[in-house]
Every structure is written in structure tokens, then in C-alpha cells.
Image 1: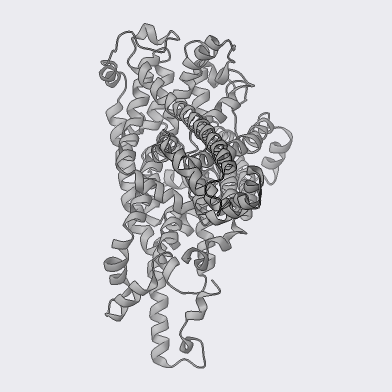
Image 2 (image 1 turned 45 degrees about the vertical axis):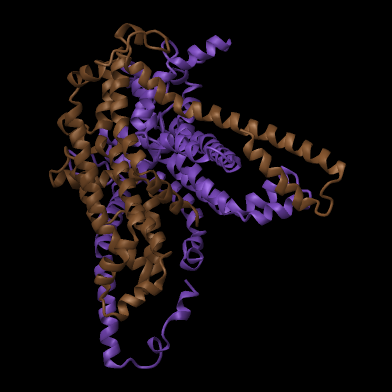
Amino acid sequence: MTAPTAVAPRSGSAAAAPGHPSSPRRHARDNRAAYRRRLIWIADHSIALALALMFLGPLVFVLLTSVMTDQQALTPDLWPRHWQWSNFVTVFSKAPLLTWFGNTLVYAVSATALMLVSSVPVAYALARFRFKGRNAAFLAVLTMMMLPPQVLVIPMYILWARLHLTGSIWPLVIPTLFGDAFSIFLLRQFLLTLPEEYLDAARIDGCGEIRVLLRVVLPMMRPALAAVALFQFFAAWNDYYGPLIYTGEVPSQWTLAIGLASFKSVHAVQWNLTMAATLLAMAPVIVVFFFAQKAFIEGVTLTGVKG
Amino acid sequence: MTTTSVTRPPTAARGPVPPALGARRRRHRLRVLAFLSPWLIGFAVFLVYPLVTTVYLSFTNANLVSAAGWVGLRNYRFLLEQDPYIWQAFRNTAWLVVVMVPAQVLFALAVAMLLVRLKSGAGLLRTVFYLPSLVPPVAATVAFVYMFNPATGPVNHILETVGIPGPDWFNSPSWSKPALTLLSLWGIGNVMVIFLAALLEVPTELYEAASLDGASPWQRFRYVTFPSISPVLLFSVVTGIIAALQYFTQAMVAAQAAGGLHSGAVPGYPEGSTLTVPQWLYITGFNQFHMGYACALAVVLFAVSMVFTAALLRRASGFQPQEVAS
């Protein structure tokens, strides 16, 4: 607890007042500064701790409520009297959670795979090729990224309805075959940071552009690829608007997001089961995050730093 | 962009092109086209086509069932003069832009600045603050509706034990948007991480120099921190506004979960207080099947969001190679 405060003031005041290492006035000032620093340290850490509790609070309350009995969940109690873990079994009989889970998984996995295949070459071209209209193309990517999906949804719905694909998630998956604007943007930002010398060396060795991309660039891109794959996976996993538009009328095609939103309306008074379902919807995301935390944080940083 | 041209070989631009070079250039052009082709198709089919069609349909009475008939400006006149909900939807969306977005940005900045100051535990805390931003929005919204439930939720229970009578949150027209704002503050992890990275890039010598000159903490923020992070700040505000213009899921799910059976009668339970423009577009287009009219709403939404996108793209020089390469 005192270790950081003991070291910090030394270096700080040494820079401010060199040449009087042992004067009594300096000692007094040092002590005051150390005292102030310790107070600030305590204040900072208390605020941080309080904030941490507030950020974790909702997850804790969801967990506590999800194991309460039906009766207790209707009271404002915070702590479960009996830990009724069987709620997590009961909830599967109340709603086709596994179907929703499967639909969500198909949507998220296929959208991620197709996005990777289609977006990497585009990002590579935007970052590494010199051609007329490159700036215009990049601005178009940015515009596409910023455009609210609601602006385009009606013509798209009519188009997919004509192709008889509404009532499934395919209208959400197929477009990722043609590049995802956000992923292209993020991959391009990463590719610009790669030193050109590596690529030139490969070109001198007689590699064509495609071989350069596959053999040299792709291995170096791994952190960025992981980040965009995770973002795309989560965007699809968390998506509510898309599945609502295209599968809203066909319950067998619902994703977890749609199912969970309807769960509360159907099981209005069973907060414990609703929270159990909520927790089950959150769980995969939290598990993936703990395994891939670094890729996430690096990816997010890439989106903003040079904004 | 401008500096990259310096490295171009001098032969490329000068004089009549020898046939071998012309062939090389043609091959280069083909290669560029091949690499870009997935996106070029996507751009045409999933952006240009629907955008043009949206504008066209906004002048018709399209409804999915019968053929669309031309109605001129009637949709827009209805929007301005008769639509009973549109002004409320505009006001709610404007509220999100004016209150929720600044709250998010300031809170994220405050949390990031706190994390920078901490010498121990910052890594763990960053994880804790980031995690909620990944929670599926539907799950997060349902969880918040439960927590803020006036009768059975823990929040009002805790407030009561401290002696504060809690409001009705998601069931009260005047508290529903503040409750949604709290939900959005829970998920500021992305913005926080971006700020954190920007704050860590501020050269520490600048702070030391400012301290030696006797600058107060506020002055250090105003004259050192703020200028260094202002591009990131602008980026967050604009992307926040664009997200606020699209705000749909949380408003829709909160109204459903809190309102139950009552939520259907008036859109945006309670009393239209959570009705946003995208939500009204969804209701008119996909519940009432007035697709032509919904397209008119989409055109308005497009116009507004383009204003803010343009504000961001004007700074697009920040995305260019020479700055990123540094």
C-alpha cells in the first residue's frame, strides 16, 4: 500500500530542488508532499474501487436473482435464500434457447468467416496499392461505416423478399461476402503501420502481390485479423435490429437477441428465469472476452488513436 | 497522401509510355480492380442501390402488397404537418444527442484519466470497465429494467435504505431516458479504451514542463492534455452522435420489458418517452407497412447523419498514411 508513495516523491522533488540534499526545510516539504500524495493515492483508489463495484454490480445482481426461487424473485431481496441452480435447467424448457443459440452461432460464425475472406484484399489494396481514386474509395468506406442501417433497410428488405430469403438470417450473412466497411477500415489502419521494406524484400525475391499478401502480410496481420474477427463475431452475436427485421415473423429462425427480448414479455413475472436466460446470453461473450482480451483492447485502440 | 508520391519511381509519370510499361500499368490496374472487386460489388448493391431506391420510394406510397404509386411530396408534407409521433421522436433523439452523448464522453474521459493516474491495479480495472461494453445490448437492457424495477429491483431498494425515494425509472416518462443514459454509461468501455490509449501517448515531458512552470491541475488539463487528445475527443463525439441517431435496440427492448402488455398501445412506452426516429421508422415501415412513408423518414435520418459524418470526414486527413506511419 505504501510502496508506490514511498518511491514517487523522491524522484519528483529531486528534480525540483537539486543541490540541497539534507536541508531541514526540504525534509518538511518532502513530508508534506508525501502526505498529500498518499491522500491522492487513497482518493484515486477509493473512486476506482467504487466505480468497479458499480460496473460489476449489474452482473452480480443478474446472477443473484437468477438463482432465487419464483417467490423470492418478486421481492426486493438482494441475496438468495436458497440457491436454486435448477433455474438454469428449467429455463431451457421454457424457451427454445438451444435453437436461438444455434441460429446465433450460424449467423456469427458465417458472417465472420465471409467478412475475413472479402475484407482483407480490399484493405490491402487501400493501404498498399497506389491508384487513382484511392482516397475517394477510402472516403466511401468511411461513409458506409457511418451510415445508419435504418436508412437502407426498406429497399433491402424488399430486395430480399423478392429473392424469398426473408424469414432467415441469410440477408444478414450474404452482404459480408462483399466486404464489411468497419473491418476494411480497421485492417487498413493496421496495414499502414507495417514497414514497406518487408514487402519489398518479398517482391524482390520474385513474389507476386497475392503471394506477398498470403505469405508475408497475413502472418504479420494476425493481431488485426483477430480483432476484426472478434468485432464482427460480437456484432453479429449482439445484433438485434437485423434479426428483428428479417426473422421477426419466424420464431424458428430467431437469434438469442430476439428470443431474449420476447422472453420477458412471455414470462413477465418470473424475473429469476428471465435473469437466468439473460445470464446465458451474456456468458459466451464474457468467456470469449477473457480468452481474447488483448486482441480486443488492441483492436479498439486501433480504431481511435489516429482519429 | 501528398508525401507518399515522393517515393514514386521517376519513370512512371514522364513522357510517352513505352509499350512494356503500358502493359505493366494495365496489369497493375487489373490487380487493383481484382483486390477491390468484392467491395465494389458490395458498394453498388448494398449502398448505392438501396440509397437511390430509398429516395425514390419516399415519393411513393409503397407498401409491399400493391404496386408503388407516385405521390410527390405528400409523404414529406405528412411528416411535417400531420404525423402525430414524429416530433416526439425527433425530440427524444435530440435529447440523446444533447444529453446522452456528452454524458458518455465525459464519463469515459473521467474513467480513463483515473486509470492513467493509478499505479497499481490499472490493468485489472481496465478489464472491469471494458467488459460491460461487450454484454449483448438486449441482455444488458433486460438486466437494467430488472435492476431499476421500482417494486422488486435492487436499485430502489438500496436507495430506500439510504433514505432516498427512488423514481419509477423505465416506467416514468421523465425518468426513462435518464435510465437509458445510465445503461449507456455502463457500456462506455470502447470509448474509455480509446481515451486511455490517447492519454498514454501524451508526452510526459510536457506534464513535467508544465509542473515546473507552476501549472495547476486544471491548467495542465487545459493546455497539455486537451490539445493532445482533442482529435480523439472529436472522433468520439461524432461517432457517439452517429450512434445516438441510430439508437434503437435499448429503447425498443426497455419499452417492451418495462411496459409488458401496455407497451403496444402507444409507441415508446412510457407515453412515447423512449420513441426514437429509427424506432418510428421501424413501426411505420414494418408494423404498419407504410414503406413509402418510412423511406421519407429514412431520407431525413440520412440527411442528418451525413451532416455529422461530413464533420468527421473533414478531419479525414488524420486517417492518411503519413500520420499513421509515424
